[in-house]
Image (cartoon, rainbow, N blue to C red; front, side, top):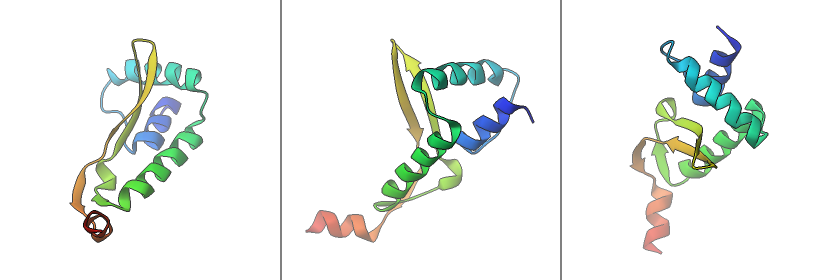
Length: 96
């Protein structure tokens, strides 16, 4: 497994699926350089975000996807977080 595949697997939780992903990996690395966060820092950020989200909803952690995208000169953290159900804590917070 290449270094790029390992980085993507670390951040996204899955390995790339085709040779077309090489372009995406390069794009990711260029954005990563501009953001100046290490793969470990990105993984920590992902885990912290997931911990907060998980306080309110049950999440399918195996299907979660976090990416850095650059568009119109701006860098954005884009996520896909499948929600299984709302937790009791969230229901109590909205009732009070």
